[in-house]
Length: 273
Length: 307
Image (cartoon, rainbow over all chains, first blue to last red; front, side, top):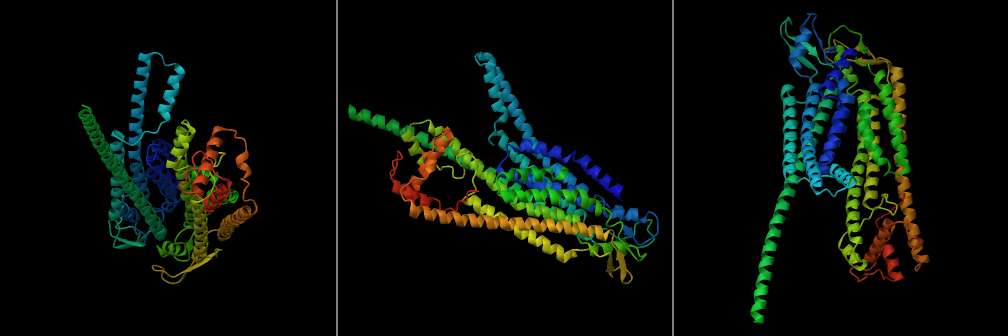
């Protein structure tokens, strides 16, 4: 049983490379996200990844070894377990976390691409001008690397796309879990009559209550993350709409201001003459 | 620390914005609870189901009896308890980071306007908000809304800790007996089931319980300490007003070591001016001492506590 536990852990780690490495990647891309995005990352790592690795994996560790059927027929337990657990909860959650974290890497890649093109432009410009000292150039490159890009233009679209992708993945995996296991509750007893079981046998699942508690916990954490993503998306859209309206207003004011001064000067010229 | 790294890193950030007792609480959390959980409890509870043996050959009986005896394992219960108890602190950290972010923006704006002429800069400063939480040394002082959220987080911590301790008592009691009697189907009749390592588990349960009680005690003391300090500050401020109505606080007569301090002093003066006579024409800082005094009294009603 202990060996199986170790194997399960390795599978999850293989799927998710390693959680600390993923965390450092995400934190790097998270610099350019909104505050809601930063909250989402913390919720993801503390309430989902940590709980999964520290608690949930050990609950599901002995799921097959302690799956007992009321029969002595060899092979019956194997087929019944396979029928009721096509994909283990743990594997589904690992995959869900990996898929949900991936869109942030898109944003990080976009930022890296922008920095790269800006750096090239800077180097080209200094080469042409020739009067920038190497020290000045280094400082400029440092500020380029350290700066925080505002979420506007193409970056806004990438960010919005990443949010939509995250929402789709979360929703998709939650729905898949609900459909495969017929809800979020783990039954205590399942009945199975797959060959080679001789008749309808009772099979007992190990730790059903604890598994139900953790399934509900992970589903709740997943819903909170979805709510945060939706709020972030709404905030981005609202910000974009208000900034476009403001720029329209400013253009109108400028235009009317120019007309007014033009009228004033003509009036003055009329009066003076 | 492995998986607890992320939580550890976030809680470390809050360390510098907590009181002394808060720092002790964090140490207790990490050393006595998380470390013990990782190194000791995991191994002791490792074989809890495989060595849970019932006096029957009926297949499935052990599974259901184990499930009835332990709806949630102690180890997982403690993991959830630690996460729940650390969450209010993380929410407070969010608030502190938000405040730091706003103050940084304000300071940048002020630095930009400090290059202008003195009079004009003062007039312009009126139009903007001024940093409220940053002290002259650059650190954040816990006052006003920050203090309120700190107190709220303490109360939430205490409530959660109590809930988990009481919950543990109702679920399992505080000691484990070696025999558990179970009569759930498919067990054919009442069967005796035997737990693995009940004494060792009881020792660790008591250890974790004592650490939880110590953490609870520390949180209560911290709350009391903050209340007492707030009351004391209130009393001394009232005393100052009646005894020394004209002398400004000695702080303002200090020689300034840096431009930041000068800026901060100007900001404080502005605050006092604005607090004393709203809308009054106090440009140039030429206020009377009485006005300074009145503003001192009215400005610091936000329950400021210097920790």
